[in-house]
Length: 151
Image 1 (cartoon, helix red, strand yellow):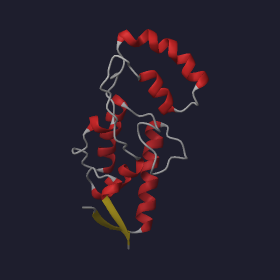
Image 2: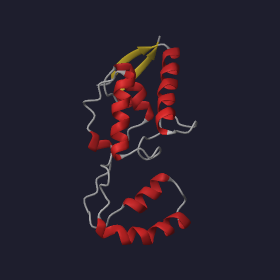
Image 3: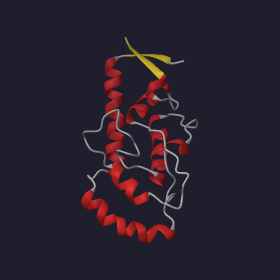
Image 4: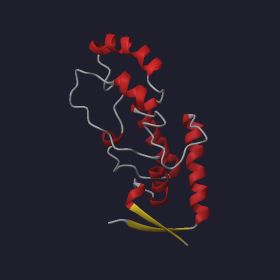
């Protein structure tokens, strides 16, 4: 069941600005970031950097992120970086830069893919909008789990 939150538009606008400013100040996020921007795939924040982001976000916005299962949304630092795959990655790196349309997601898929690990699980997307929504509920809340009513 979706939870209903009653907010003023000015609160939403200000909180969105606050979260985007926080991301820009700490992670060099571009100005064209929207609430649909994915933290890992679009911004490239993963592993230890993602863990640090969540901790700083908790402190800065007083949000309890304890229910966020980190491994559902982010890959661990060096998860797909095994020494046996280094040579393959070094061979594929120039190919990925020259041939693939350059985006972080395409680069990450090409560079971090390890053929020795067959059980790669897809991660769920954590978006900037989810962070904004969590600031209103003061606990980890996905944007899709709430209905915002303007007052």
